[in-house]
Length: 218
Image: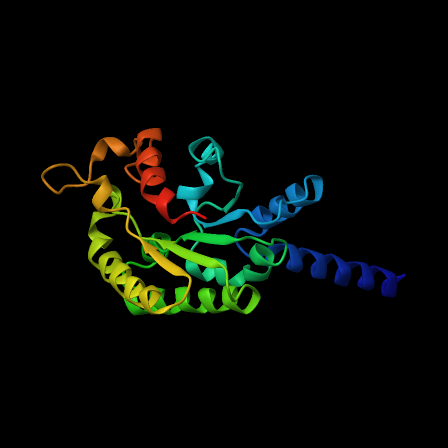
């Protein structure tokens, strides 16, 4: 009886430990898998991968009615998370183009983080993409200026510059700068393009993003 009880306790602790150790955003990835099982993803689509600026763009299809979009943004994600779940984010799909928006949460998570660290994380993810899709178009949308994260903007700007330089040297790759388009006539990013948290975008903000993105989309 003691052996049975001990075995039960051991199993309980193993199950409890395994549940506690599930990585952040594990459930988001499971949700993507469920969606893909219920509706097989189309081939030759444009795959969006990144953080909450994509997650909250729930009506992205209406901005690009002539495109086939697969949105796999998951809110709060960092470049580290894209790398951790790279196989889940890439293997189920056969896209003709991948567009990435990610990086600002890396700095929000660690204010002391250097630009070169985030650039390294991006390059790691980019390499993983190229291992699976060596010839498709891969584009990176610049980290946006957000009023609520103004203190982090210098690191973000430096990251944008370094990633832009990297993408310029890569074949079938583009850096999409959305910051300029979000500025007013005085060169200040328009606060009216953000919802109350001064981090996420309004429909007008997404309209501007869409206008900038369209020339780059396959």
